[in-house]
Amino acid sequence: MSLLEVTDLRVSFNTADGVVHAVRGMSFSVDRGRTLGIVGESGSGKSVSTQTLMRLTPGARIGGRALFEGQDLLTMSDRRMRQVRGAEIAMIFQDPLSSLHPLYKVGRQIEEMIKAHDAGASKEQARKRAVEMLGLVGIPRPDRRVDDYPHQFSGGMRQRAMIAMALALNPKLIIADEPTTALDATVQAQILDLMRRLQREFDTALIMITHDLGVIADMADDVLVMYGGHPVEEAGRRDLYYRAHHPYTKGLLESVPSAAGTGDRLKAIAGQPPSLINLPSGCVFHPRCPFVHDRCRTEDPPLDAVGGAALSPGTAHRSACWLPHDITGLGEDADRARAAAAERGRAGGPGTGATKGGAA
Image (cartoon, rainbow, N blue to C red):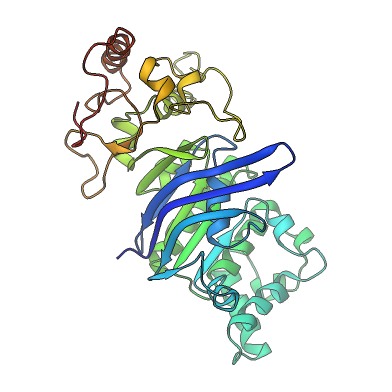
């Protein structure tokens, strides 16, 4: 059994405008020492899904199952959840300035977290651990900086302090929600290097939430692509980058600026993300898909296996798309194959769906 197994997670909220279907049928697993990247546009359900696992979405209607070492996070008692949150599963948020209390010293906040989960720890022991963790994440003179307030730290230093707090009790799983979005490129690279090093040292599982495919390329072992609250493709990192199947994944990859300086224009995905209150019928991506055909407008495709030899051994490659599942890649040949399959679908011809085994 994996460290964390999430099955058919569903999250919705009642609002004055209607029901927001934030997450619809999300399933994934994470093993110890591995990194799962969750990627997608803003509003795709990435953050809500993991906040729900931590029971940080009050008022939400929640369904599905999330087994952490055999215990369901969604149904366990509040008392047990407080024991898990912070000690066994830690979370690093996007903005450390809003996550750290501005009126308390950074060291004190780490100390209080340690003492909340370890009643036997003295104040001196907690302070010693806080200094040790600040030094571990690369903050200079940690014995002095432990008494500084959050506003006295730079953005990168505050994020390091959040990582120190997350790792203080050696959690088994860390959820990092856009941890480098507000940082410049140099500091971002330093934070990612730090997280990789600490993950190896502590053998911690990591869920990395981001819209930055460059971060995913650096960090992830497996990748889950979200769109409209629903997973549309999951694969090992190499399969996703070299053999992407879903047109949305293809669009994300082609919209990344190239460091080669070729001068080519970026290929933006046409249209806007869907309203999570009024979702389109059929495949939720069909209003923006260049390969749409009639079946896409009426039937919601399941997440089925993609055929072909895997580039990431041991990791399944699945896609929620009615295009034949032997069409992968980003080149012109793959585009022509997608266009031909879509044309056959519009004409009502064969070869527009996937069989149970995943091959067209």
